[in-house]
Image (cartoon, rainbow, N blue to C red):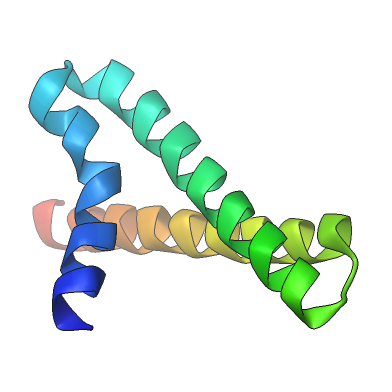
Length: 82
């Protein structure tokens, strides 16, 4: 399980090893959203839930978490660097 977690966490980082940072950000975000959506499509079908709603919930939570991470990073950067 640990290896699977590491591999799945590494997938969104791969574009940063192959592309310039501005392009890698876009590719990484697209890959992450695609993987989240694919995971939730399978889960919705297994659970008998609405695929659209399940995917929208998961992607929304992922986007909110990313936005919170960026906001916290900017806050810390500005707090310590002036």
